[in-house]
Image (tube, rainbow, N blue to C red):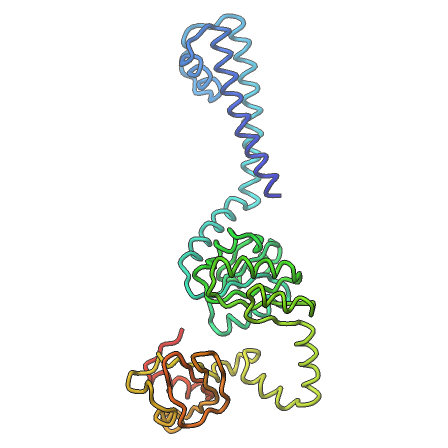
Length: 339
């Protein structure tokens, strides 16, 4: 539809130019006016301003003027129809909004780029928003964007397999890219492009075919999520350990009433006096009520229920569990500001 509008707008502009050119040539060769006088006569004729003629016209000149006025009226009517339809259909305001959206996205940093608004994309967006993450959604189907437009803070309509679309989504300033397209080949192409444009970005992708999992990782994906595997494992877990699943759901973003029960704190966020000390030195259980349930080493290795003598070295992180008021007390204790 947009291509049709552009074509009609270009055609209207061409017809207006053709009227101007025809009038100038006609007055020059029929009435022997100079080029500037011919252009002047054409302008006052087609705009119906009513200024005086350069000199009285002869029969051929008057006949040509009648034809020129008739033709220009038809071109005006056609152009007005195209412009009115363009405005009424909202394309003008959509283009204006699209330009404004690109300017907003250009100011983002550390955000997540989410590709696709299918069922997995929608679920990912909902969970990211519950965690107050800035998310730029890229979707090439305009109907899917319109369906969720009121819920989307940042979005782009376009094909994410193209570099210019990823760049417009702020890929070079983003921290994470999530690709949820149903076609593994498209996801593979996006991973290759994203890794080239931003080598340090974290990439998570969806996959439907087990044979492509290894290829997606070789292309640069940090995590490959197999749709059938998640569904099967989840259903089996509901049978083998339902209480555990219910507890994990309580801690997850699936339950917005219990969000922020788990918090990750980087060692660099701690006050200077606690760095290079042990977990025991923090004494968080007594001071805030939270419990340290995990420790992430600078190399990315996770330690569950770390020992009290674990040293808080630079580049590491601790994962704590507690009630929202306990998490807030922890943030106040260490003067940590959260969005």
